Amino acid sequence: MRKMLDFLGGIVLGAAVGAAVGLLLTPQSGEDLKRQVRERVNLVLEEGRRAAAERRAELEAQFAQAKQVTRT
Image 1 (cartoon, one colour):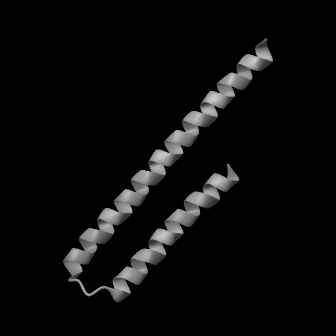
Image 2: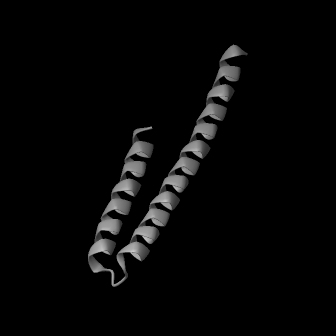
C-alpha cells in the first residue's frame, strides 16, 4: 500500500512540476494555457482514479480468495 501511495504522490508531484515548467516556458496565451493545464490535470486525476480502482479490485479479489482459503 505504501508503494502505491508513493507512486501516486510521484505522479501528482510530476504533474505539478510539469505544469509549473509549462507555465514558465510556454509561448501560448493565458486562456489557451489554462485550458491545456486544466485538461492535463483532469486527465492525470482520471488516470489516478482508474489505477486506484483497478488496484482496489485486485486487492478485494485477493482478500476474498484468502478468506476462502482460511475457511476450508
